[in-house]
Each structure stands twice: as C-alpha cells, then as structure tokens.
Length: 318
Picture 1: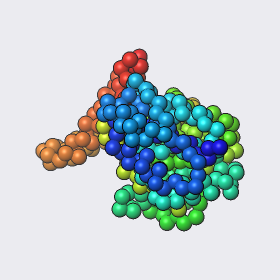
Picture 2 (picture 1 turned 45 degrees about the vertical axis):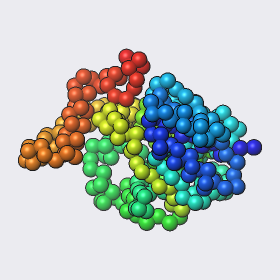
Picture 3 (picture 1 turned 90 degrees about the vertical axis):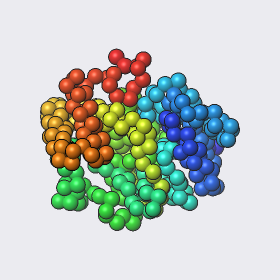
C-alpha cells in the first residue's frame, strides 16, 4: 500500500528537479511513497538524467508544455495512495516536513488540502497561504489591505505557531487527500499556469472539505524558477488565470468589473513605471524589466487577450 504519491511537474529546471528528488529520498522516512515526474517538453536533458539517477521514479514525458494542471492530472490517481503531494522543483524538504503533514491529515479526516510553511534558504518566511481573489485584492494594494485588515487578509509577517484554517494555500508543496479529489475532481485544466490550486481549494471548501496551513511543516522554496524562464509570458498567464477564476467563481458583475478595471490598473502602473524610468534615464535594470512587463500586459489586452500570446506551445494556440 502506497501512503504518498509525489507529483513533480518539470519544465527546464533539471538541477532543481534532481535536488528536489534527493530531498524527498533523504527526508521521507517510514512512509511508502512513489515519485512521479511529469516533464512538460524540457530541452535540458531533464528526463534522461532523472531516468539515469533515479530509476524508481516514474517519468511521464510530454512533447510540449501542457501546463501545470494538465501535467498534474496525468499522474493523479495512478497509484492507490492515501494522499497526493504536489511539490515544485524549486523546493527542498526540511526533516520531518512530510511526516508533520501526513500526521496532521491522518488526525483530521475533514481536511482536504494542507499546505506547508515556505521559507527562503536563510529561513525567512514566505507567503504560504492566501485569500481567494476578489475585486478588493486585485484592484487595490494588497499590502495596504493586510496592514488595515490583518484578520481578514493575513500576512507572512504574522507569527503562526499552530495549524490554521485558511482559504487557500500556495501550491509549492501541498498534500491532498485523494478521497477529496475523488469527490470534487482533479485540477481544472482551463488554468494553464497559476491559480489552479486556488480554484481547487475553492471547490474543496464548497464541497465541505477544509484547507489548512501547517507552520511546522517547513519547506525551502527558492521561488519562481520556471517563471524566470519566461517572465512577461508568465504574467500574461497569471492575468488569464485570474479572469478564468472570476468567470467561474464570482458573480458576473464582479467578473465584468475586473475585465474593465484591471487593464486600467495595468495602464496606471505602466505610466508610473515609465515616469520613474525616465527620471533615471532607463539605467535601472529591474525598473526596465518591470516596465517591459507592463507594456506586454497592455499589448495583450489591446489584442483582446489572445490565447496565442503567453506560455502555451505554438501548436496549441488558436
């Protein structure tokens, strides 16, 4: 009987992937598990090296980037495991992290998803859970909302010691009860990249399952490594996923207001960043990068948000 099924989606992050698998093998003790790597068309020999170094790992090889949700769904349900664990390639497990998550889920049968405490390599806490997207969170300043309404909008600055029920968890390392997956279904493949786990948490809670953040399950998260390979394309995919989430899970009026005012917010940010870049004669690399990202987001909206602009492979683009 398999206790855990680890699912790792990889896209051109070979060394991170190898380190992640090493981390699982060296820290998960006393539990029966199977590791699946779903490769989304990498060209860095990820598949070859994993098969050579870790022959027990089951590799599912895609010829193109199918997106995160579709890749995860390929591996879900292949083993009769009690729990599935989605873990990013840019994560390293602390000792007992998985045991903490497993023990909690075993004691709390009403919990469908549990997320770990993400940390930088120096131990600094990262954002590990979040509210569901609303007009307030997407159109206003999130940092300001967290400062004014700390109970409604929790922050990573808060010292959380005990397991805490939350709206959604960040999907870098999450444990999901497979009974809950059978209840609500797999990840929604309409999401190509971003917010698929948020949508999952939303559906789980609507079906009566609880979502928890576990601060004692500590995970090193290097953060955004795949996103760095295609920065502005990733921002387009986030925006696309945001619109999908609102269309599926929010009232029509909220969806329409977002479609009107989110581009306005992008335009304001573009103008502000252009002004700052102009003041420093475009000599600051990070400021130029930010400006180019806003420019591409604006261009995507001018083109009426086409599917062919973003991360999807060319032959999937309409």
